[in-house]
Length: 92
Image (cartoon, rainbow, N blue to C red; front, side):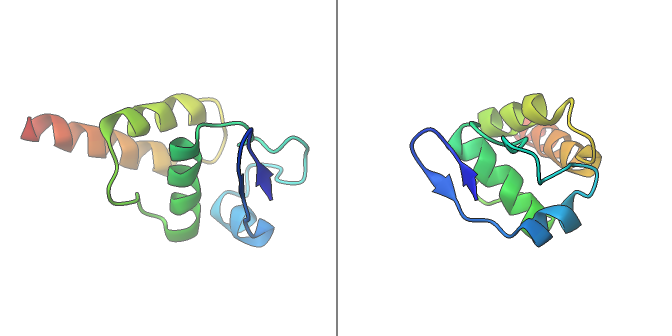
């Protein structure tokens, strides 16, 4: 489980390890602890499905990039977030 300030997400540790084996998911607190709910949801959605959730807004995508910038194993996730932001900018 990943505990947050006012809520919790029940997750499968095996899925987390398969989605990103570069992170030690056994440490406490979890590397994703205390993130904003929308950011945590987006990252977990990606780890479970290898895609971004729909809907997703630009601010959440930017926050996800900021949160994962120093975390190993999120390179593809960051690329997808950057592509999402680039495509949205073209639509504006």
